[in-house]
Image 1: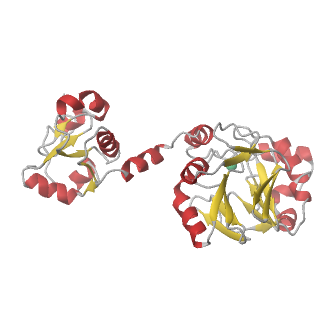
Image 2: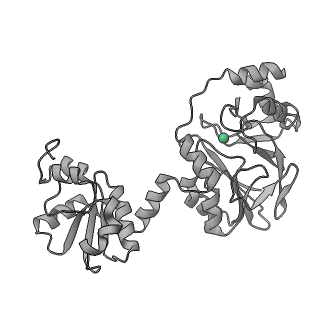
Image 3: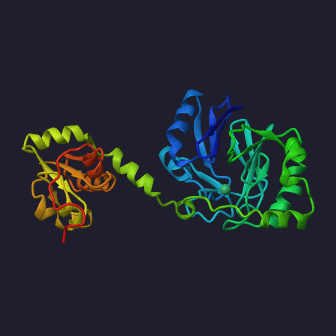
Length: 350
Ligand SMILES: [Fe+2]
């Protein structure tokens, strides 16, 4: 088996598993920021990714399954109970994904979520958030059920071969893997096997909510985009200009370019870059024909922090402005650099 484990700073773990004889591979629990890495690792190992699999609906990070599947033209695989409408291949308990000579068998393990499954192949078990190293998945998020988790663990995966290696979807301490036997012996949450005691312990954990839970659930359940993804896609499609280059252009009298401030009027009046024209992002599409009649002109957009201006530049490019550029930075960085500002100053605008 070809095997790669990919960890992110925030404790997410994904896995690339492949058949060396047929070069077919799958990515388990891909995270949206790591897609290039999975593709690069697959290429380095001579593998072709054939499936993008999520072990469950993640609430704490942005799943990359849909985007990876879209890029590669491969199916998104989840358990039958996944609420996501974009799942192409829904597995029931005991069903398998065939990767050449490798078999990935789905074991339905509800508890952390209703759609949780573990994936068994050869000497290893991908446990998602059902069983973690020294812990279990939490059961207090949408779809969580401590009684079901108790059942999935003690009547399910913990009865498998103790030598099976455990690869979870998260590890916050950078540990690589464990085994069923080690977890049975040492995992503090597995020491009292009584159902009610387990349920009481899970209900007393009182964990903090994951950051971005609303956005993660929204995007992972619908296939919609995270805001960061929207921004990164916009940024990938436009060129940027440095603050120093813009300063040189301003000093030269902006002869070759329209400088567009896309913030609100109040912010513009309080202080803007010399020579800038105001066209708020919210009015861009409605006023573009009057304000920017020449689509061959070079246009530079800026805002306060450099994010809205990137979206504005991407919109202008989509509208046919081929020479649109976004500022690498924003008004805040411009002011911090000590560059000139025109305006009434903060709080004095009307
Ligand atoms: Fe999870």
